[in-house]
Length: 132
Image (tube, rainbow, N blue to C red; front, side, top):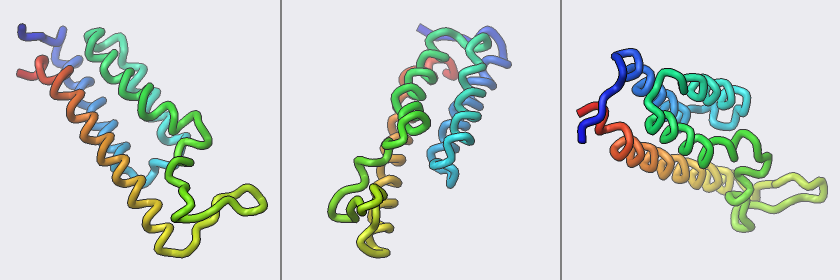
């Protein structure tokens, strides 16, 4: 069944929300919680302008993938493995050497590529019927 937006404004907002999330996944500000929070809140404020299922698809994605980054100080601790570093006596993660820093950020980049694929999958499932 073909789904439609109420108007072109809703269609534009949905598209901009998608682009905003895609931009966040490739942004150099991915560790800036204030920046992330501001962008995510702008998306969440679009609720009145979107069909419920479209808004919920965005909100579910954000809740699952961005809220932990914003609200959990240990969001990236799974990447702090013993092969790249260790917790020092001050409780701070310390990299073994420069190559371990590269490995750490490569793992995070891989994680964000996975999130990008997940976002595309969500868009194909939830948004595509509105744009056909």
